[in-house]
Length: 301
Ligand SMILES: C[S@@+](CC[C@H](N)C(=O)[O-])C[C@H]1O[C@@H](n2cnc3c(N)ncnc32)[C@H](O)[C@@H]1O
Image 1: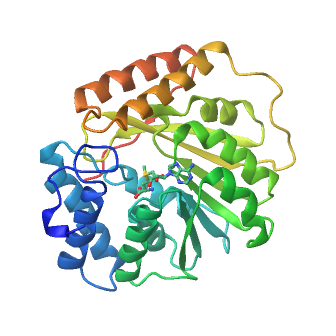
Image 2: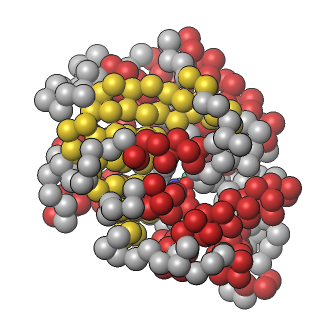
């Protein structure tokens, strides 16, 4: 695809040329950022997301803005000498943030979309981050996670960032536990647990004595809408998940979150900022009625 002819908005889910937004981001990084500097590449991605796209109301779905300091602090709380696992690489922004936050750690990041993987590998290589420091895997989490134990020793991961499809978070956590890839004391951070939502993960984390968990509330990157991140620490690796089935309302909210995801991907349709706000408010009302709340994070300056 000729990069110069890329449409103004564009993403895998819009009516514009597929991946035009992500390719414009790559071009922006290659032209504007400093080669070999993860910090410069991060700043340029954030600038592209908040200035170039913010005005067109086309949203770059990354953990920037108020979410970035949470990602940094959470990853720095991981047990020492452990590796980082990220599920949902997209264009490599959060992998760069993680590399800056934990300079000694190896980072494995995975994405199901080969186009995203190619863009992320280019962004990361431009920033000077290549395997074995940062390795981008291609694959769907459901297929990939059970296979990781062939490449990583038990207890390898002290920090996991979940930023793939949120309705799979609880199943992916089960897969990581079954594969024994998590370290005692490992920290788990999951994005977008309000918008579009991951009710079954929140239920699992609150009900399972293995985890100590809370939700953090902040404004979404480049969008004036509230979102939550779930933060959890493995307190007792030996304890078992709860036998209690999730309440009916939680299952309904799970289906609601997947309907929102499906709507967001309809080419040429998408969801505007006001609709995102209304949907997030509806999800929040449902979660609150089940006693699931979030602590507000101070906005970053
Ligand atoms: C919200 S974006 C990730 C943003 C990125 N973490 C950041 O902050 O820069 C979600 C990504 O997850 C990928 N994805 C969705 N479902 C997945 C799955 N089940 N396994 C692996 N990747 C998945 C999508 O292709 C997309 O690139």
